[in-house]
Length: 234
Image (cartoon, rainbow, N blue to C red):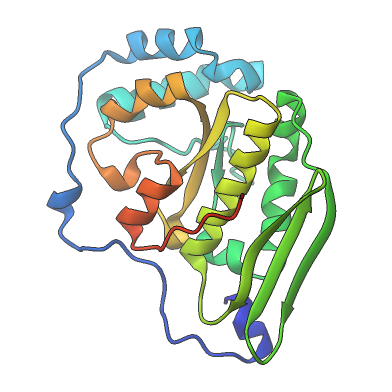
């Protein structure tokens, strides 16, 4: 259910989908790398620096198999009841949930432990979500900087929510001189996101054979998923 549905506004759009159902157009040439070599490179570049030491053996094993052998970016869970993710860099970012009322706040709250480890502030001093007869208005102020997410928006905004959320987070990371950036993976109800440095992104992207499974910067992600990219940071 989208935010507009909560106010009785029926969307004329289903959900975001790739611009083509022809999977071949998303196939990418890949480089081959042994799993143990990949893990060594990831370690050197600090990929595991935020992970719980107790989870690192599983995390390294499944990440190596996923990227180096199966050529996709795996989402890794505990394997125990509650099945929580153990990779602090990666998050489920269901685009529909993000568009629901309070979705942006919930995503920021989930990422808060990682921001603390990164020494990144995401102080929210104002947040507005309101719908009137014209459309949806949604804005947030982080560390004193206001961002307009939607202004008189009509219809669903699943993909738009993901793009604008990622760009706002990345704007704050840049302002605070962090080398990390949030990249989007997949979309719609299967959306995910991962924090990577430029060096980490350069390392992992050529290992993935499907563009939709790649961690993508927002402008490229929008082209793949048929979303109109909008600058919300200037």
